[in-house]
Length: 100
Image (cartoon, rainbow, N blue to C red; front, side, top):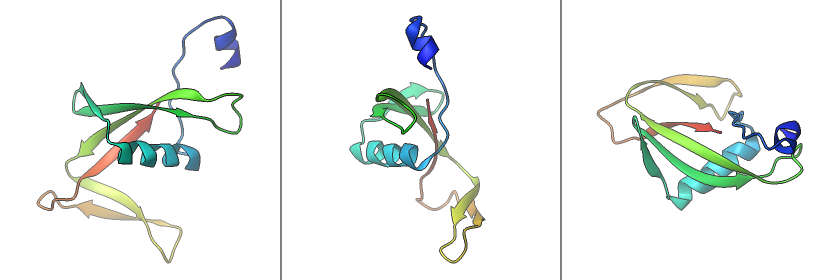
């Protein structure tokens, strides 16, 4: 990233869902400033500073509503995620998030 910044090249990376990224997503989710960007996606902008970075960077978080399917949910007794079906008849809104 430093080399790209040094030559003035714009760049975009997908971030891993590290604990810092997850905390950012939770803060942005509570803030509630999501905007529709088409194709069923919503986006919001935030700033994030990770340990390996020398400064905070702009982060775009995208989310989409999952209609049905399987979801992994952490069990309190085990560290192993459990797969569970999403019931589309329930009012539960499950979303998938990506951070760029």
